[in-house]
Length: 103
Image (cartoon, rainbow, N blue to C red):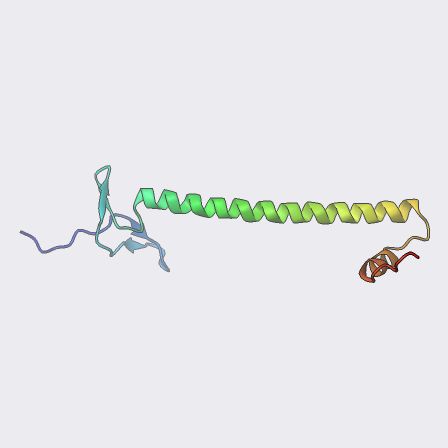
């Protein structure tokens, strides 16, 4: 009986051009290949799916913020084009100061 530990079958390219075999012992066998817990194809799929879902959420939030900003700039441009003498700075300043009570 051999004392040699079976290792993961994946090649790792961490800082080297040619790479080296993963040094971790195998945990599962899939399609006749031995994989560690990091390189197991099922775990890799789950990890990638989780990352893609996170990226999609962040991308959607960035896109929505950009759309809101774009609409605001278009609204300001419309006001400046169609109402001469109107200035965005005045509108922003009046929005920051509380409105006076109407008697």
